[in-house]
Image 1 (spheres, chains in turn green, brown):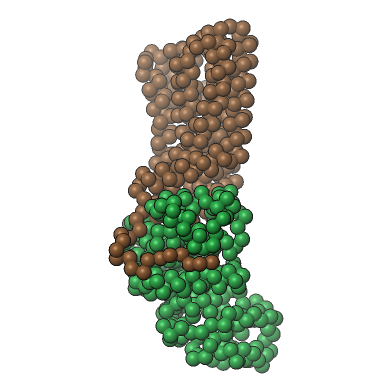
Image 2 (cartoon, rainbow over the protein chains, first blue to last red; image 1 turned 180 degrees about the vertical axis):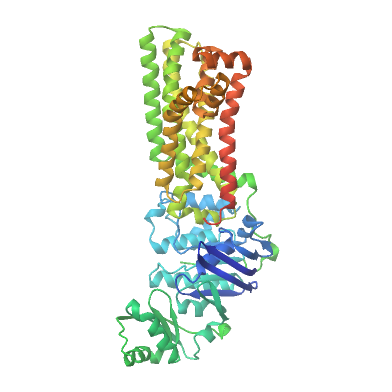
Length: 293
Length: 295
């Protein structure tokens, strides 16, 4: 479905994406994992063809650079936060996107029903909550039933309930045969949804791996987020890695995947090195699916 | 939340397709038109232009104390000055805020992620804004024309229609320049600032510059006419004067030169200048926007 070869993007002196190559088969799912500024969003934008980059990218065999709009017809895109005219009403915005996607008004209405936004057609975009906006973006992305869904941190602005709904929908989409490419800061989401993970750092793909390799455990995984002072974050990540923990520094705390019966262990490891943990957030309890092992 | 119905087997259906080039433009144009006429700036501009146009028409006719074409000529002269001030300001600022505003709000990225090209987005927005601006002008001209017809009768309707036509052409030209500013600006405030600077330059500075240049460099009449015709506002003004008086002699030696040299071709030459100001900036805008490396 996706063929990316030597994708490179530079903004002035900053190398945002450097020589990234990967293939994604139909029905497969891949997560982009990395800290803020690792190049995940830029890579997504290159694949969408909304920014020019070096290298070759094709979606379903359609060259993104030469036939961008035809390639984008095969993609449903969900941004981190939907940005559309705040004054637009949900119903009319949906009809506009339905026309762009060459589907009927009936399909537009059906999509709103499916994401639980029926009855909100007269609401303006600015009046929607973060969760409603993401559901709306998901409805637009799925209007034409495209084979590929690309999502850029789709749950980062959602509360636990909204996140759960979106993840469940994506899980069902994956089961229905959709190809998924998504960026995420949350190991639990990646474990739930992705078969492969591209670990990105400073524009490079460091590893093309699986969630099971990245967070190796046979037991149910609990992901905890540790909040430390900014100056300690990198040292703490190194300490935890040396202690054998799967860690990721994502710009919003340290995410550590641990067996559910060993949640305090990373804090103890850091305490031994006199690194203070300010706060801890226990993320969702996740079970590694068989397919990702 | 239930999940959206999706096909488990796509082989029975064709893959989703992008809209055709013209259909994509039409959809963006329709959306832009609807957004524009529902916006506060549209209401403000329409109200201001209508009030001023009706005021100018009413006062010109009252002052002339005349009926028929003399009254129309005086009104048209008053409207001409009003149009030269207001219309470029409306079109330049509307164009300047279009793409830059979308970029600033973050909506441009989402639109470009849809199955449309940058050219479709740009042309769609241009056409939608052009339709809204012309619609706004037509309301002002329509009510003003009603006053004119009531006080001066139906004499000069053709010339009035030509005035409307040339004003529409001026609107398209200034909107093209505004769009060109917009695609190169990251913030709408910067784009609006540049648009205001260009408006001031075209309305005030270019006239004074032409006068100063003609004295300093002792320009020939043909050079002065050529330079004046390059300014879209001067082209518009001369077009309307030709339309009312059938010659440019009222403009002095330069007008006499143009009348004698170009004869009946003057309106075409001047209209060509306005068309060039419409097509060239828009073509450059399409080229630069489609080649732009970032959003």
